[in-house]
Image (cartoon, rainbow, N blue to C red; front, side, top):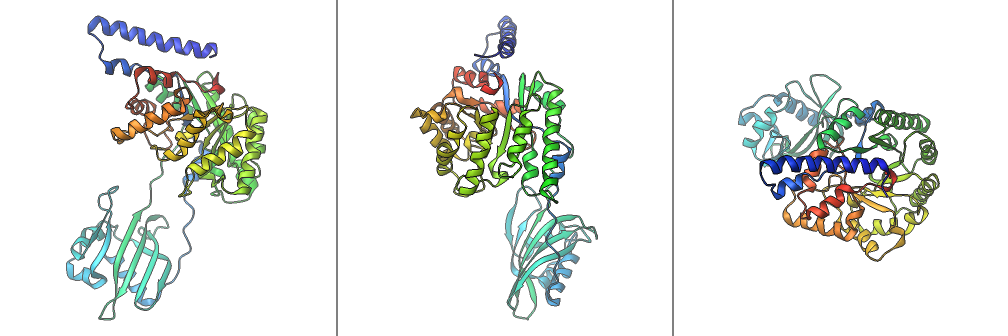
Length: 459
């Protein structure tokens, strides 16, 4: 049964609907779309905070060391630098490019395309900054062909403006020319200041959602980016988890914090046990992809089992992002998770993020294994739930939406939790994320089941 607080939240939502119904009925009959728009989730189950410590992890690793290239290749780089920021005549381009040069057109970012020929080269080189330096950190040459890769620095600065890769060919006149060129701009940082509880409350209010599950991003700090000792890394992980908990305490009646950790780190269980004693913490967020954790690796699987066993002992729920960078990610990973990990954590809620994928409904085979286990009444699936964070988008065609709806019914609508996963990803805030979910070909009654679902760790 739901707690009195959840019942109260339900009554509040129902009261809002009744009031809206009364107002509308006094004016004009409601349309199906109006009725559907009044279905609002009780809880957003997948939202991130990001504190000052995590934000430092946006800084990219330092580039590879500069290298010296042979003088004849160096002259090509210097000639290329002199073209940046201007639109040179064709004859000047012909001095450093082959007639059939192929270039990556970055003049209309984020839309990229390959173009070919000297005429296409002019606007691309003009898009660069005057005074830029092409600094190589790798090259190869066999005397007739060559490859150079490195970074572009702006106006003598150490800051990286972009990354480049050049393919060169020695022409019939025995002169090196660029036959292929690719430059990619340095990505901008996704956010410049902490994502606070105040911001989360704002977007929840905008969506009319009463409660939110806020997930720490401390797992970023355990992804190998922290420079220094493992003790220094762990200190930053603790700081980020503590910051998340303190932020959630500002709105303890509405926000529920989860700590996070890289499950493969030797301090992972220590941090889980420490977090279990912090006020309000209900569980841990684990990101297999970010942590490079694979259930197919026997040693890593053993570590994962230890952490899930420890979570079970402390009654700490788990939000598990199972998707990994493995190109073969899918059904096998789900089977191993069911066979090897669920048995050691039979007493806790396990919320599988993004419908067992990485978002945008990209791993249907992985979800299908879980659906089959549920249909087979596998007792290991008793406390497994799935969140919808970033799986339904405005770009999906009707046939994809229909497949998602079918899978949700196979899993069981009572196991589906609403989540938005913002604003870390820059994707839709909860109000728009829920609008995307309303696109699914579900009946209003089915949609209301999802909206009213509350994860067991909140009851």
